[in-house]
Image (cartoon, rainbow, N blue to C red):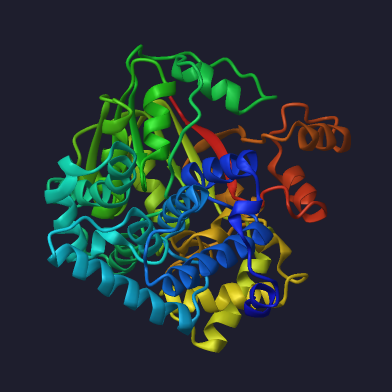
Amino acid sequence: MRNYIEERAPIDVAILGRRTVDLLVANLAHSLITKSQLECFLVRVRRNFLQGAKERNFEAPKQEPQLRVCKALAHQSFFNEFVWEVTDEENQIVRQLEERIFETINSKEIPADNNLFLLASYRPLHQNEVIRNWHMNALPKLERDSKASLSHLILNPVKEAALAINIEQLTPVNDDVSLAVQSQYEANPYPRWNSLTIRPPRPYTKQIRREIAPHRPKLIPTTDTPNILIAGCGTGRQPISTALRFSNSKVLAIDLSRSSLAYAKRKAKEMEVTNIRFGLADILKLGELDERFDVIGSTGVLHHMAEPKVGLRVLVDLLKPGGFIKLGLYSDVARQHVVQLRKIIAQQGLRPNLKGIRAIRRFIRAHETDFERIQNSSDFYSTSGVRDLLFHVQEHRFTVLQLSDLVDDCKLEFLGFLISDSLIITQYVKQFPDDPDCLNLENWHNFEQENPLVFVDMYQFWCRKAG
């Protein structure tokens, strides 16, 4: 990784052209970059900016495009949680840059935008007490563009910290594995997301039928105002999406992590979603709730529990007769590359911190052909993503036959996998023409053995509780 970056000549942003700069800035400022070569290019751009700033004695550059790109790099670094490579030389210059900003603030002056955003491309500004306090006081004096960007980089985390304090605690959290998982997501809430694609709202049974196609069972809603539980809501993408897509719904979203819940609550406020209640709770303790639910969603959660089946039984007990549950669990077949890397991490003694995460990313890039699938995952491009993918404190994986046992043991009716790729459905039906509804789990087991990437993210599927 380091050679790949350093062996190339410096980059002058001024020669890129306005249209290219516009496209680059738009992408950097609004979405996580998930292309390895583009990341390496941007790491070099950032380094060149830093070295240029030092040569100018941290005076503002004359080139306007550089400030725009620098500001966008600050947003991108915030999105990826500063996962990019940094050399010792860069760290030394960054410390000098920080000292220059402190001197300016102590002189009761406004630091140059270029210096602030350059520092923000290497360090989280909201964790810097001097800059955070200065920003809170100087906010009315800042220009509109700078105010908006700095508010995103500084005020949003401050808002989340305030929201976290007042999150309602619904159950205690005292299970050892639950506490370990809680600790991970307090430090690294996951996933960090910015935008959401929302489809028009529909009755919940129509939404479920849409997701389990080609199976088209007769699903009769028992209520016009479904009570929905999202068990393990993380940073809020699933409950907010559910609240907006399921007509007239009331959503209870629970999680172990206050940091994750605060992120979710901030996003819900920004999107003006009012039919969600957030609470801190352990799935193992949810039996203490008096509520019962028409729909439950728990995607990417149970496989992080000590005993997933115990967690599922708790959720099924909370489901009303005839209610629906959506589950997401890791595939053992599809995650063998992850298993291999977790062994390497253990052998090398890497810790789940920024140093360890950067180290395993270097290893993966040095063995690019062996771990191409990891680099194709969006999780590879952020600190919380890599930690969730490769360093998780607790992980179970399943085969389709184990899913079948799990569903049977909990007395659930399997309604179908969520398969977004129509070519997979076509291929499956061609191979198993006697199962046009795609419900035979033994068939799916055989199909996955021949097509190990079918469930590369996880198995996602709907079930129904007996009426």
